[in-house]
Length: 380
Image (cartoon, rainbow, N blue to C red; front, side):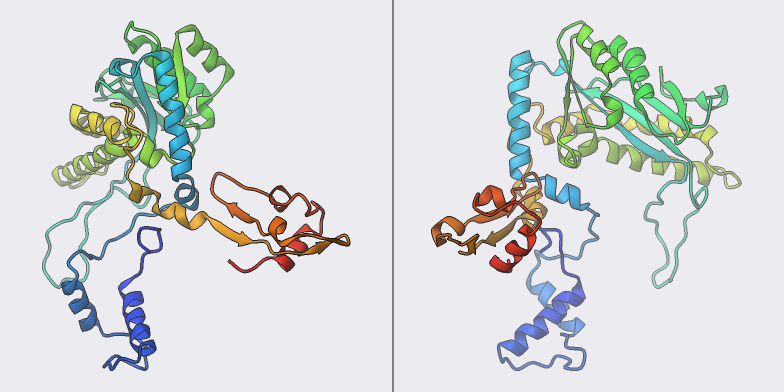
């Protein structure tokens, strides 16, 4: 259940133990009123199975859970491999780049602290309830070369006061929401990405399929500079994007520690947009390192190229998106439809949908199709 994204809580396990005991007719001393095993039973069960532990799960959207499946990933690696063979860059890491954006807030996430045992509430000072978001566009290659970042602030213009203590050669920009758009990405592509490329060509840029990354002007500029752009499958970047896999996580944790140190050293101040660049620079210089970048490209199977780099456990949540329906024999329009012809299987997956008429051409595609389907199908 946990592998498929529907993990059980301790209460669920205790209730399940009670139900198994009752149905199997075993003698037990569980609570019949609550219909649940006791917490002491759970402690014993956990001790008997040391492979189990209680974890706080990370949220996984329905789109991500369904799209990360073997069919999508297999097709992705097949296309990526053939494309890299065509460009002849599989063994040329300096020509393989990955770019992605991440949001960083002026209000950090507090780290765990040491406190008194038994105390009900432990606090850690932050800069406010809701902080100001700053978008950081980062780019690295498989040789662990780091390009200067692009920082996007919310506002109409970028003042000189915001640029203090920023990473070297940082490109600054602003937008109404602090999010990137096609004009800002095009500006980054021309002013920062192309000037920092190696002389070898062609160059492969791997990035997600956000709408801001795909414009006619941008594609024309890429073609004229022998830059090939490859988009990752949608809703799979948490496993297929090198920066997401092993760089942005350590970067943000380091930024949080820098914010905590700043507040501790300056008790009467808070982190503002004018302090952001100095704190971000510390985290950027520390975590944009060889180990993290190499780990990202290796974990995603991009370099060295390894189509089976994503573990089988990652596909667990996608298994629940497969629905099997048996279509039984029926009579339509006065014609007998044989059981062998009608007993087809309709499988709906995250990346494949087939209509009833596609499975069985004799079922008419009309407004009554839904009623006919419901009448002739079993519950899955």
